[in-house]
Amino acid sequence: MASGTKPGEEAPTGAAWADRPVVTRFAPSPTGYLHIGGARTALFNWLFARHHRGTYLLRIEDTDRARSTEPAIAAIFDGLEWLGLGGDEPAVFQFTRSERHTAVAHQLLAAGHAYRCYLTQDQLAERRAAAQAERRPFRIESEWRDVDPASWPADATYVVRMKSPRDGATTIEDLVQGTVTVQNAELDDFVILRSDGTPTYMLAVVVDDHDMGVTHVIRGDDHLNNVFRQLVILRAMHAVEGGWPDPAYAHVPLIHGADGAKLSKRHGALGVDAYRDELGILPEAMVNYLLRLGWGHGDDEIIDRQQAVAWFDIADVGKGPSRFDLAKLQNLNGHYLREADDARLAELVATRMTGNVSLRLLTAAMPVVKVRAKDLNELAAGAAFLFAVRPLAIDEKAAALLTAEARVLLARIGDALAANADWTSAALEANLKALAADWGLGLGKLAQPLRAALTGQTTSPGIFDVLVLLGRDESLARIAAQAAPAEQAR
Image (cartoon, rainbow, N blue to C red; front, side):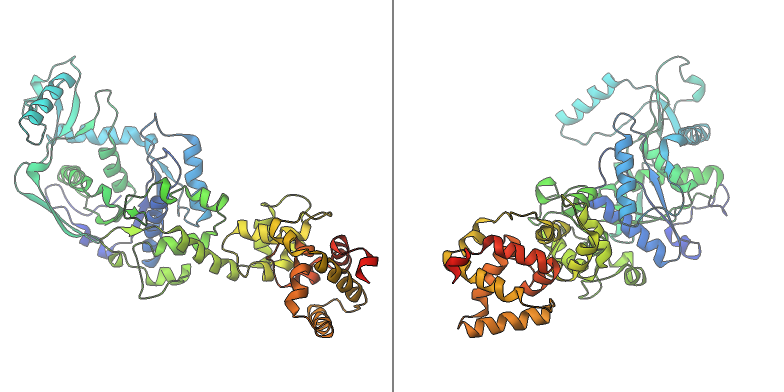
């Protein structure tokens, strides 16, 4: 817990954290999957903490018991672990701290910074309707704000509201947004304890950030307006007991789709687990892409984790929304596929394939299969020919190449290759080129039907790599299965 000031002293602002160890936190609500925006927020918190040799914490804000689910919590942890963004300490579950939150509310009540409000829902609804009819903003103006606590009814239902300041203005120096000022008259007396005695999010988040020693609150800019209410609680508690400094704030713009609209499923906004499981994205590619959504370092596009830690500064995050582009993510993923360890890729790809898959053969194929692939699904599709069972399924385009003339050529090619004692890429290439020259044909005239016969497709790794990977016996058997009968080939 932060300390060092006395009741009545002015609360230190975010700048006062400059000489203290940095502590950041990622605090998702477990009401659904870990989405792209949340993952980027977690990454920025992780990077900022690592850059400053600080601590990065996780907090599950599960106070909404009706919507918080165990599967959602599991999905969040799973997504964070996949991205390498697990917390430095065990996660804090906000709901388990309800007694602490309630105790703070009662401290504020006892000190006169909060009050019991007995306004009913019907009364509030009437006042809201009147404000709408008069076309003026609705603000809570509770007659219970300044009532002597001795006059509070003993048995009536009430909520606890903060006494927000009514005069002047509150200004923060946001590390992303810059100077942001709100007139205090715009703040209402918001609820910190519901009528059933449970704490609200607004109270819980302030208490938890304080107790966890959070120095920098880095989150989406949809929370920017919350700051000014949360500061009311922070500064009141500082007046009560001291040691409740303002954290530094950094509100990151939201992510939009390529069309500039708020990011949604139609833009490809899936949970991070879907990018892994359905789209075949590598975690290092996702981290690199999220890093570049709103933050940059010159013209650098490929930035590994170590370099990101060295370069990252929250002040370099742009003020405007960034745009999510699935094609760019896939292209970046292609780069990381080519850089990835072949054995690791083989294990990832094997889970996307059916039948008997040899990890040894799949690993050996990776250097040539991954050259043009953009995701693990394309890798799996590109390697499928290795484990196809004869008779090979031939797709429509490949079948069009297997003309009567091509089948005659295949028979002649098969005979020539069968005599090849050296089944290496170099030897096979020399042999086929010699055959093409002898027969007065371009190499493509041989390679195209050969590829169709060996893979059942018109695209594949280099034909000589295909021959080597399949091996002599399997290659000759596949060629023979598509070749013209011997009497036609003569």
